[in-house]
Amino acid sequence: MSMLKIATRSIPRTVLRTINNCVEKNLTELPVAQRGVCQGIHVVRKYSVNKGVLGRESTLKSCNERFFKTSASVFDIQVVKVPPFADSVSEGDVRFEKKVGDHVAADEVVLEIETDKTSVQVPAPGHGIIKEFLVADGDTVKAGQELFKIDVTGEAPAKGAPAAKEAPPPAAAPPPPPPPAVAVAPPPPSAAAARPAEPAVAPPKRPAAPISSIPVAAIRHAQSLEAATVKLPPTDFTKEITGTRTEQRVKMNRMRLKIASRLKEAQNVNAMLTTFNEIDMTNIIEFRKQHQEAFQKKHNLKLGFMSAFLKASAYALQDQPVVNAVIDGQEIIYRDYVDISVAVATPKGLVVPVIRNVEKMSFADIEISMAQMGEKARKGQLAVEDMDGGTFTVSNGGVFGSLMGTPIINPPQSSILGMHGTFERPVAIKGQVQIRPMMYIALTYDHRLIDGREAVFFLRKIKAGVEDPRIILAGL
Image (cartoon, helix red, strand yellow):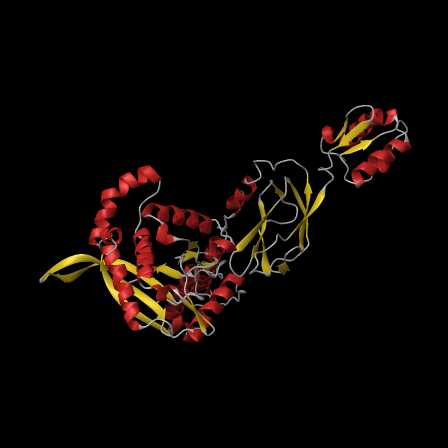
């Protein structure tokens, strides 16, 4: 709003022009030649606050006789743009978290941009009100494109605002349907009772046979109407099926599309073959129970089984470097490092954050790194850099109770280890049948590069390293 529009007789027009100039040019300090300007500022400030032009009196301040300052943040309607993407990402799809008119706090997420690999959150630059979205929900955007306008007021949203969302529950009280059902049921009996009283002599032929059957059918029909319930299509088709025989088409998000493309690419490019083995988990379970309390006290997190499998995998990769290699055109790339991708299931799809230099890590280092990556994955804060690279993948379907499966290679890698559930089974131990906690493991590998001999030796090395981690320390 132009300051010239609030001119009064008590303020010189030149003073108002100077103030208006400062605000429009987004200046915070402006030299003033006239002494009357600083005196006029107080009048403008008081008038504009009363009229609602400014949010608070401190918006315009006079510093001294020669300068005055403006806090332009109240007038500042900022345009937020798409942040820069990683080199491997060029565009993404917009998904709104807020709507126009919402009062948001600084750094509160206004929308998310779903890319091929991860979701990029776009926060509010400051406390303010969303004025306009410059893109539609679901639009594809590129780096630097304008997303929305926000009026940065500098005032945090009231704490009572969330309570508005809790208000809808009282409205969810629709018990009027039962009364109509009761009103519909009584009419048939009353009508039936009224008829026999009047036409007792006139129509003796028809009522004779049907009199006993019609009321029963009518009562049963009325009862069925009372018991009948109206089914509505589910609000979220991904979480329930209500039996309404309806369908809903939903656009696949970019991450799901990329996952589908990469999995199909893995099947088309690699000559995949899977070999299996089983691990006796008795020793590692006992090791975990024995040291769990001390480990949790020192590192403030629980000791899991993944650290043992990742360390055993790194040890086996050092023993069989070809499993850590990959085919690139007509060349083979051998990597002198072990970066293991760990498959993590999230609501938006499967992501594979990378734990780097696992060959140099201890069990504690691996657990700490995995806890950090898992927390970022749950919050949707994984960056593209967290998932780039990787020379080998470990997928743990056992957390969902899987007994056995054949994992698919994660391109551009050459192999993947599949862990499964631990179940007690009878096994032969030194000629005797014993009940032991056993786990099946599977290695899927690119047979173009890795021969069966190396794959079997590799899997046996993992088995030995998990069943007795001391062989890793001994270098056996």
